Each structure stands twice: as C-alpha cells, then as structure tokens.
Amino acid sequence: MQDCKINVLGTKYSLFFRKRDEDEGLKENDGYCDKTSKELVICVHEPELGSVKNLEVYEKKVARHEIIHAFIEESGLSDNTFICKEGWAKNEEMVDWMAAQLPKIFVAFSKADVM
Image 1: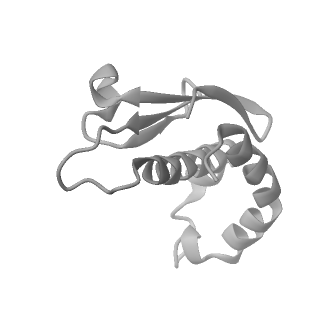
Image 2 (image 1 turned 90 degrees about the vertical axis):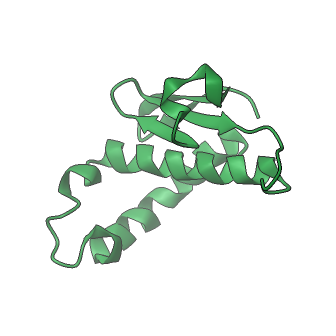
Image 3 (image 1 turned 180 degrees about the vertical axis):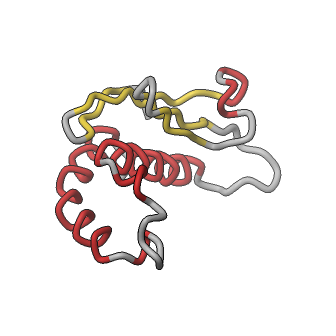
C-alpha cells in the first residue's frame, strides 16, 4: 500500500503508511485520524510471532476504520455523538448518514486501495 490523498466530503486528507518507529502516534495505536492536520496514519507491521498471517488485510481494515473516522469528523457527527439518548451508533440519523455517504466512502477506499 502506498501513501495517497483522498477526498473526504470535499476535504483532502493524506493517507500515510508508516512503521511504528517512524511515528509517535503509532506508539500505542495501529492507526489514527488527525482532524487538525487532515492526516490518516496506518501502521505497517512486520510479521512476528503471534501476528495475523495476512498483515495487508489487517492494515486495510485499519485504514478503512480511520477513513470512517475522517468522514464522521468532516460531516460534523463527531461533535454530536452523545446528544441522542441511545447514542449515535444506533440512531437512525447515523444509518441515514451512512446510506448517503457510502458511495463517497467507497471512492475513498478504492483510491486508497483498502477494499
């Protein structure tokens, strides 16, 4: 996988794949979304005892997760997570948002080659 730029609801995000020792933010995480710098950083793992066999599949899963964080940030939903009594993850607004945004997310996933 290679670094690239993706469009997240009209905002350009940079997607980086880095080794754990190359980025302080990966010290305790396998990836992160920095909404202030518009960066998504994914940890590139080295095979080791106990790791999953297909690290590329796992890294793509982490990339998709971080891309979703970026979409939630750019849509404004992250600012309103706890307004709903039952929480946003079960709220119909979240379902509607996902249904409307999935085509755009798919384009971003495809551009980042994380499908």
